[in-house]
Length: 420
Image (tube, rainbow, N blue to C red; front, side, top):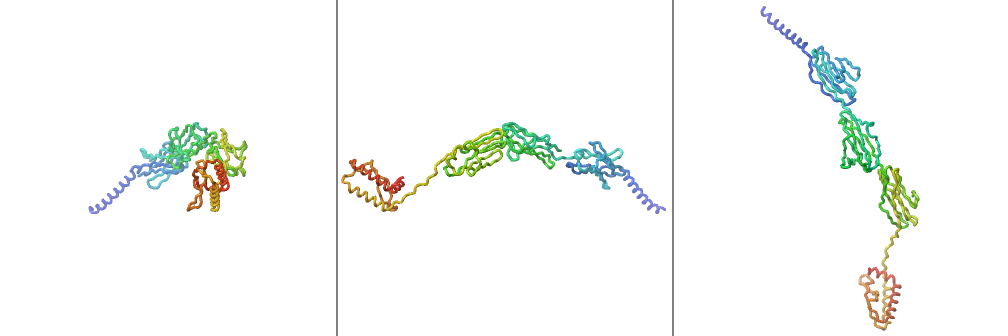
């Protein structure tokens, strides 16, 4: 009997241990295996909050939106009437609360609760971030106008979560004048104040709103600076020969855009075969050009460039005058050896026919012929000579010299060229 009781006792002990373990499992209270994470989601996206519970047993899990004090789900059932909320269970320990197309009002604390006695719960946070959005109704309109040297403030308001940061830039990349004391490439703040604005500050300004939630947004505001026309003339006096073409020009600045034209002799100049008109415009600047073709006597005079807009009118004046046509330089004349020989023969005859002694004086100047060994016959610089005391011989010599000059102009021309 004693031998049979041993195996039976061992079996009974094993059964008791198994029952004890089962009882312990059935009687162990639920507990949370891990905390609910904080979840961040962009507006309009989907989000899920997990709640992991161990030893749930027959107890139930419920989800509650604390900020709205609203029960969302109990166990597998959705209590709220908002169709965007749902719940799922993975048949293990995880209970998921799903929020589709998240809205800003969904932001807040969510509680996962188990209906033990006493009740146990844990809380997670759903963060809903919103990309920036510029509020046009609270911001400066897309185009504004201001008179030069006046003040203007540009306003840009935006919402979003987190609160957006506002930055200003110029579209053309030029710096922004802040309080006329310094210039910056980027200005931060929802209000940009421009003091005593000038025409160089005209253009498009970009208001950029960003909060690290893509995408960033911007608004383009065009600032027009208005002023009356101004004109300056590079050359107020222009000369040209008759029969040529000439171009005169004026530079203008004006805003609003000015009407610009040319006037000559109180009549507006229109494009014709006689006149060519060209105007190059860039922003508030313009370059006016007038070309007058084949200048005649009636084309010389005063030309006016006129510019006018709604704020005023101004003009510039250009005087066009005639200058002589450039002449060509005279060509050197080659002396012939026969002519030189004739001159020498005449001079010898004259000297032979004279019986009186001739005394050279400084008051009498004549050209003396000389032969250069390497370049033919040329005139050298004259030397003073003394003449005879007889006045009649002096007059005869001067008359003969005049005749020689008139008869040999080509030789004289070459002589003068060599001397000077």
